[in-house]
Length: 300
Image (tube, rainbow, N blue to C red):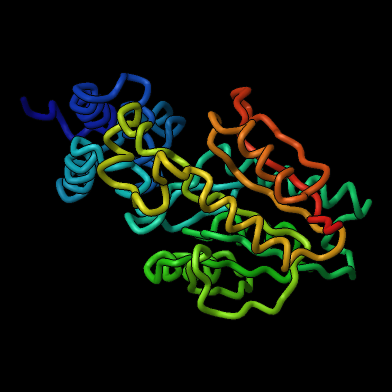
């Protein structure tokens, strides 16, 4: 089967049909539209207004090879090399997780709460405070908070040198200053003297037993060390983060954690066990237990 013509609408329909062999029609259509917009700045409206719009042979090849990758279950964000998160653009590749909508919810909650607490807009605030993002990956959390809260001093930690390379590039592209730290939260080698007003993390939390329910585009392409934990100790990262927060959280500081939806009660109990107070288990837009917000640790 050959492409009927070099008309954009024919090319779109042809490759959409190809993708329908492994994706549903809506998802296939959405991915093809992303490719056209990314490569040629052609969106759905332009296609409708210019029905005789055509591509050259070299332009068609770009779509061809992109679809070839998509048919290998490579995520479209990795194919084009970027994604959107909280209205910002982020470079992504196989060294970092693709930011999820749930994570953007947590970032928005942090921002909204800080605005409520301070009863002002941060662009005009003289107050300074510090934020640490643990397991930063692409840097989407740290960079977005730095952008929205320009008076914050933001730090971002990750074990992966390659992930930090991506995050540093994203910080430059989004014009924010971040202090990056390469280290392992499970066994810190560097001494971190700073205390923080907010410690935030979206650490690995998917149990190995849950792999069978995941799609090939995740299992085959996204970094497993950023996703999975053992079935025997699924809260290992949270325990270490909370223990770290005991020593590094300022008075009236907060810990924000994205969590496994199936382990909400266990996470709530862990926070209480480690003497954190004002612990709140929050749901995401799908109604699933997804976030923990906790006040500072209290020693008695």
